Length: 214
Length: 85
Image (cartoon, rainbow over all chains, first blue to last red; front, side):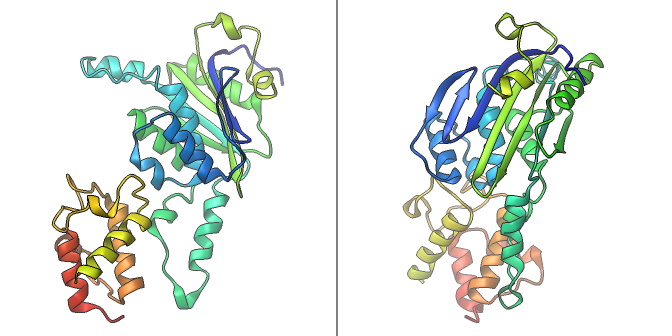
């Protein structure tokens, strides 16, 4: 399958204790576990969203990436009309990964495996689905848009491009935040990008596949 | 009772991942929900688990939670009167 022409506006990669935004390293620390990395990144970018600490690791990963991409473009101006905000914030979310929510599923399973000490945690249970991270992003940015989470063996960039293009061409969304957010047992990699109908000179010769593998 | 209140504040901060809040930030009569600590419905369920797991109290009627979980003061008083461990 050939990849259709889509217009990438910005992208972010998170892996190996580093965050790279639009090709530039914006945060890098000494090797540590993901929980610590996420906490330090949150503090570094002064995100001011205490609910972040209640999220599971997959949601934190997707949240960190989306936060840096969406914050500059999502309308938060209280003087904007509701209609203008809805149009401006009509950003579909389409993510995928390999391990689904297995990282949290395993933790939850451990919490209920001892019948003599059986205290399931509601706060862990609510994250035992991969698409919960999309809900967290939607709540944060007041998005009432299309969203989907897919599970693939590897990042299927053709699928992601085509799916996003359909959302844009059928006017289901003004922009699409799409990508890969994989995390299991402290191994993590996120690649997220914003695409829309407008061509961006900076990435006119790039597509999701080339940027993901850069 | 003062020790129990301090214990509860620590448990709440740890269990509910209240990263930016310290024990001394929580007054005994601060509301736990709404304008106080700002806990949500999932946090309420976690508080019910704490009662069961750490103090042997099973809340049969979740509606009871509204008065029990008003503040650290009301929570400690309820635990003190009903704990089995």
